[in-house]
Length: 276
Image 1 (cartoon, one colour):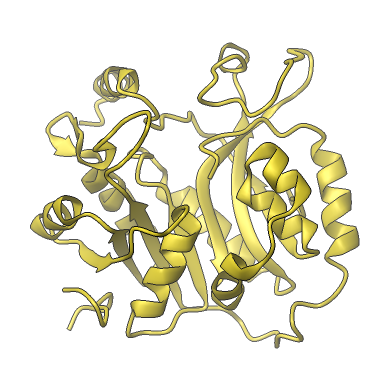
Image 2 (cartoon, rainbow, N blue to C red):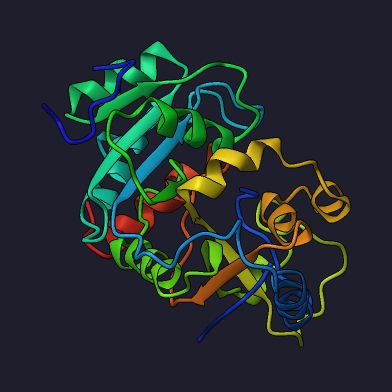
């Protein structure tokens, strides 16, 4: 039996998926996280969280790019490239794809991935990961939400956020950021803010995050918060409810796929660096 089999289918600091956001006032976010997160997380024990599953949420419907997970990038479906990169992470015990679409499920099973079918009612990737987690036969301490449109995600980044969360027993969430290139500051698919001051050292949020599994199971039930609704960022809800997060800064050239035009860009990038 596959370790990923399911019952329903074959620098860091405290901080508060949008695909990628500019982090304004990161120091203020750290202060907020430290203040609100002072209370312990549900009295949870300090047991080391060793069991880790990577979940790639994937949906076919998308207002900007329908069928995005199945688009081919140099001859392979994007979801396959993401899965292959995730499988290289040493901290993950297994990797599964969570989807509500039979076409995506069939494709993933074709290249050997474990698939968990989820409902169409999931409002975001976090909720899809939570539903998939509940359907897995094995129990896990940490769940890594890996964006399916990051076909060049480095396994080292996955390992980095997992280890950051494991090293902070009072944190329930971890993620990664990288320096934002000035030319990307005005890209509407990367920026989640208004005016941009190019003299400010902005950070770009990468599409990957890890959750304490117990916290993930209760996250969908937490009430939405003002900042979360204002910025449309799930991470802010974690902070506003008083929980702690870990953020690591990494060197990474972000090459996610948001719109059809990004496919040519990422293929050219891969050819230049012999990543095909």
